Amino acid sequence: MTLLKEPLKNSLKKSWLKYSESKITVLGLVIVVGFALLACVGEHVVPYPEHIGSFVDFANASRPPNLRHPFGTDLIGRDILSRIVGSFRNTLLMGVIVLCISAPVGFIVGVVAGYNKGKLIDTVLMRLTDIFLALPPLVLALAIASVLQPNMINSMLAITVMWWPWYARLSYGVASSLRTENYIVYAELTGAGMFHILFREILPNCLSSLLTKMTLDMGYVIIMGATLSYAGLGEQAPKPALGSMISQGVKYMPAQWWFTVFPAIAIIVIILGFNLFGDGISNMLGADES
Image 1 (cartoon, rainbow, N blue to C red):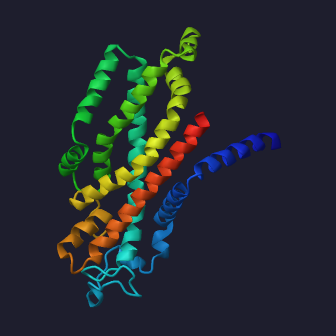
Image 2 (tube, rainbow, N blue to C red; image 1 turned 60 degrees about the horizontal axis):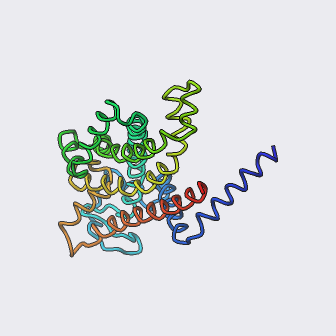
Image 3 (cartoon, helix red, strand yellow; image 1 turned 120 degrees about the horizontal axis):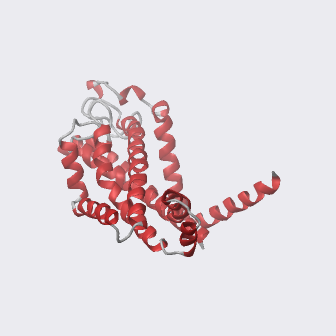
């Protein structure tokens, strides 16, 4: 048992040393971990948990940042800090669910087409992918979300529909370049089926690229969800959403600047954290492959 643990321990130590070579990527990890923790337990640690849902306190409405309310209060007296932290759970869920659906779908489409490059199935799948890639992603997401009932689930669906083609294109490139490798040819000669080759031979070679892209895409999915929420097509009141908070607050700029500025800063910090974290993952996995 000890002999098995030592290589794993050394591998993890090597990966961490490579990841932490850049202090800025460590900052990204801290931001991501902090965001995830607040998403899980934020409702229990915010100063005014009741303000996350239906709550009205007109006596404290539109208060600027102060000791009681560090981020100020909104038009009906709700603590903005509590509502920002309260929105983190759905924000994280959106990113995780969208990527956990779109990445596998895109991978399957891409590797099936890449492995069968030059055949009819390749032409059909990749032309379908190209159609989706030709459409502006935000316009496509807005179009889909606008014909559905505005809520978080439908906004997830809208983003997922326009996100999978990027993973299809990525996995297609890897699969089409690996299909003539000796170990793939050997697997075919020994009678291995297509699914064995796709998931046992090609997937391990795509995994690092897929994980890196998923990490980097988290920030983009979150900002896409915030955009739909800003347009009124995401999470609906009284539930908090960063995009809708910005949308409601922008009408009162610059007098009540805190309505908009603090939710916008939260989005910026989250996206920055995931981008830095993704860069570190890319460096770490790239080192492991070499």
